[in-house]
Every structure is written in structure tokens, then in C-alpha cells.
Image 1 (cartoon, rainbow, N blue to C red):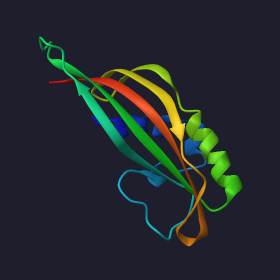
Image 2 (spheres, rainbow, N blue to C red; image 1 turned 135 degrees about the vertical axis):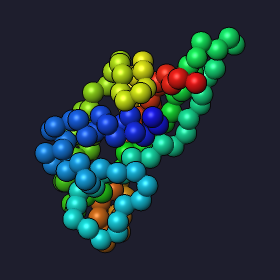
Image 3 (cartoon, helix red, strand yellow; image 1 turned 30 degrees about the vertical axis):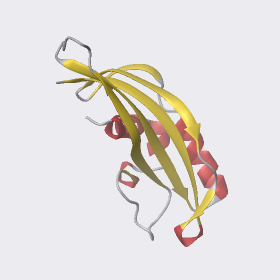
Length: 133
């Protein structure tokens, strides 16, 4: 499981958020230019893997994941971003096949104008987790 998939799973499971942004509008890769809004795009920005000297059969990864909101209005962008920032954080436990998952907010990006005069903003998360070799 990747760090972006971990954040995606937390976003999918966060009911206050999915009441506003349906699960089918939370994705990785690239957002369509012309479609109903709001959307969330989840991308892994960077990742570092740490292997113990003597392999216990797993390794620790720490990644930076960006969640971009694309909304029809500035007010919608702010409301959705508040919901994104309210996903569970701290020691999460297990998500999919990733264990010892820890998530924290890790900075945010500027307000920008996106395609079709949409409103965009990013929130970054620091995700640490263990994966089997």
C-alpha cells in the first residue's frame, strides 16, 4: 500500500467529508478539467524508506502526501479543506496492509485559480508506516 492510498482510505472513511465530496471524486493521478465539483486529488510527493541493519522482514517508510481541493467557489474550497484537515491524525494503526501508520498535517499550499476558474488549495500530510519486505 502506498502513502497516497493510506490517505485516500482515510478520506474515503471520513463521513463528514464524503457527505460533501463523494468517494468517486477522490482520486489519484489527474483530475478531469471540466466536471462537477468539488474534487480531491491525492498525490505522493516524496518517500523515504528506512531498512534496519538486520532485516526483521519489514521496513519503515515516511512520505509526504498532498491532497488538492478543487472547488467551484472560494467558500466551498475553504469548507472542503477544513474537512480534509479533520481526517483522523496521530497513531492510526493498520490501514490495508500498512501497519503502525502515523499521520500528521505537514503544511499547506497557496490558494490558486484552477482550470475553468475553479479554486484550488493543497494540504500536505506526513505519513509514516511499516511494510512487509
